[in-house]
Length: 405
Image (tube, rainbow, N blue to C red; front, side):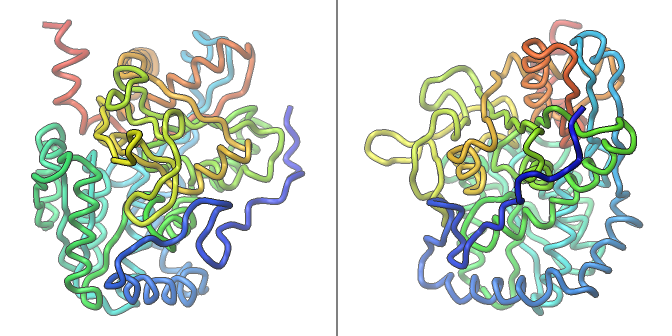
């Protein structure tokens, strides 16, 4: 069994420039620099202040429903020949891990004197979380969402509207998450003092990757303590899906100092390895700048960022958070991919045998975990179940459920 002793010190990154080794930093127009400086000052002043943390933790406990459960998966354990545990972010209010970050950033926005919240969303979960947090804390909210994602995530669009948010479909660019982020940044530039941009993943210019990581690390802190208490030791491996990377960095970060715990991130392998057929930036990407950060991105030989493909809207992004790029290059975390078909098969298996319908994003992690179990019989595996699959029913109706007609 793995010892709980932390033999490797946790990463102290980013450095003062917002760098994770070679990655990260700020690559933004001059018009955004004052807003980012103001945000950085707010993060430095408030984020780890006792009264901010007290209010944040109060909301997490009494409204979000934390701590979320750690559930053993007995049927998957038997089928895979492993000891499988699930960190159940699907049980958090609004149905995914996104609410942790949304609540924290909205509390920060109020302290900074912002009058409105704007957000981007892909699968819709960050949009729903931002709308809910804004409603909870009495602020108007505008959510930018790619037109493609508006169509394939219609249930979440309706939820955002019921929660009082204005949903703006983005018809330019690739009409997915990347285009939504671009549009949100344009809005922020137009009113950097009165508007707070609540970025939904651990991407973008400094200090966003750090801020999101700190707010999402509650996932890994809880999971680590729960594993020690319920399983009697740390996992051999922790597995999480990776799009922009907030769920994964939230799970991984508290385990970075546990040298005996292997960490695996699973990206969207889509239809295959061809450029434009997947959204696996760490597996197939090269270094470049995307939306304010130097990281690994999917680009052609001329440096043009390419459109991506994934059956999962939440993983359908051309880049990844800079800390993930650093963790891959340093060797601390291993990254691989799962295809659309592999993810859908893993989703169906979990639903049928565990009574849990995970999000398609999360199903990529289940696929990677099953692969690991096949090569390591008896391993104790922790899977980040980042969200529930209710939002994916329109996609599942067109894919898995067509065989039930």
